[in-house]
Image (cartoon, rainbow, N blue to C red):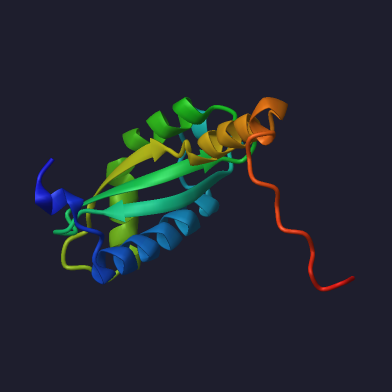
Length: 136
């Protein structure tokens, strides 16, 4: 891993990523994609990470109800060029980033950790939460 990839995202990357997230969410909400894998599918764009040169963007998505995740991501990647064109019409950027879509697995991971922490054998070893000290 290079030192360049270890740097945190710049304010510009974060700002462009957040604006891309909002624009992609609006485009997806309009239902302009005609792929059968996306029919009756409501998708949430949870995060967009932009490369330092703003030439590439990775959008993390999760479908409402978590069904058909892999099919939805594949359909979005097939439609990436169309979506890139739509983004270019709605955002003022010198170069519209190339889009890639990935499944957001962070909710699955958080659920897995929560399940582990709720096991009696693990809870026994966790520190007790502080008692409510306001007297109510």
